[in-house]
Amino acid sequence: MINEKRVRLLQKGNETNGPIIYWMSRDQRVHDNWALLFSQQIALEKKKPLIVLFNIVPDFLEATIRQYGFMLKGLQEIDSELAKYNIPFFLLAGKPDVQISEFLKQKYGSVLVSDFDPLKIKRIWKRDVAREIAIPFYEVDAHNIVPCLSVSDKLEFAAYTIRPKIHKALIEFMDEFPSLKKMGKTEIASDKIDWVKIQNSVKINFDVKEVDWLKPGETSALKSFKYFLKNKFENYYELRNDPSRDYQSNLSPYLHFGQISAQRVALETQKFNGNKESEKSFLEELIVRKELSDNFCYFNKNYDSFEGFHQWAKTSLNEHRKDERDFVYTIEQFEHAKTHEDLWNAAQMEMVTTGKMHGYMRMYWAKKILEWTKSPEDALRTAIYLNDKYEIDGRDPNGYAGIAWSIGGVHDRAWFERPVYGKIRYMNRNGAEKKFDIKSYIGKFFG
Ligand code: FAD
Ligand code: FO1
Image (tube, rainbow, N blue to C red; front, side, top):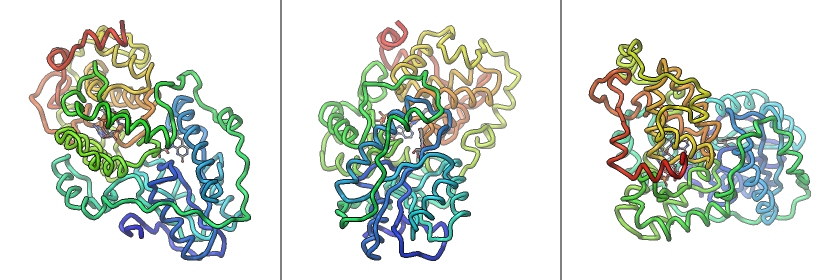
């Protein structure tokens, strides 16, 4: 049975005797998906068919073909995997409130289930859909191990405040997943989806090319994770912050699109029983840091603006608005890696060419944008725009929280005061030089 703390009734309503419908969005996977398992649980209880649908919007937060291509290939795999369980899959395209309400009427849907997402755009989608329907509408947190709304009912200050709350709750929520059951034959035939037509129908930027070093989809996500455990996990602890080496897990694109469950990753990491230091720091990132980002985006509606910073940071940054900037660059100069600094340019080129900048360099990259723009607002706009355009894992709560940490000291503490930064933590090139071989990193991406 699904822990009911994962489930929230968004809106009451009157059930019809039609199918149970799971509107998949954030958690794009068939296995280890609490929202799908919950939908199946009620379908079996009520002896009703189960349908899964996904609605494509043509323009999601600056996303380009790099992200849509990754996502659509993952959805294609879902379509064929669900067929093995007699669960019809439908792909809609357009405004969610129009598409979903239309579909529910057409299919005579009796209950709607969605998955949890703290981003404003998703909450607006759900609000608009709820207005159009009169059947029960649930939301299931399938993304977090400890459901976001169970961890805390308020904005957490930092990792050290949320960590004990998460660790205390892990016992209850780190349970093994039940497997998805095969449904009985249904007369509801899913459409034959023309994936090429869909990919060409989205009006997005096709200049940011898809990447080929990371294969999209649920099967590749699990393979990639097993590879990480076997070949990198041992040294993750001491090498994860070295951008000149490749010792991060590279799971963030898969986690962002929900093609792998963080809970599955945590369960398998514990079973693997590898290097204990690596396990501690990996699970800290995967559970505490990641869930802190959902908490930040859910409870702070200004997660993507200056307003979202703590008072101490706003006051301090305001006091240094007039400070002389040694360099000021436009978005285009940043985008085309045309700054005076080879290390920063290399980080930009890593993101543009691979779609995934190393985690350590993301902090450095964003902080230098604060240093080389006219205002913190300009810095935020630049960082979010570039991050969401080029990172495969962009448009994610982790990104908004990471950028707010770097530019606005969110989840961080005040640092020694200095020009432009005020009390926001400073990072500089010789700090980087002490940590890793910057020549080899620059040579790789800006040689
Ligand atoms: P690993 O080190 O293998 O970590 C495993 C998982 O833990 C990650 O996939 C992620 O889910 C989580 N995690 C790791 N570090 C963090 C962190 N600092 N905050 C929250 N969760 C974390 N992450 C994104 O998913 N999308 C983004 O757009 C994004 N933009 C960022 C921008 C800036 C300026 C900063 C400072 C950080 C950003 N991050 C973002 C967080 C972090 O850098 C990435 O999650 C991480 O580098 C992803 O690589 P990985 O999965 O190989 O990491
Ligand atoms: N979610 C959807 O339900 N429909 C979409 O068309 C869609 C497009 C999309 C493109 C890029 C991207 O990074 C995310 C996208 N998402 C879409 C949202 C995604 O499923 C995640 O839920 C959120 O971005 C993470 O919170």
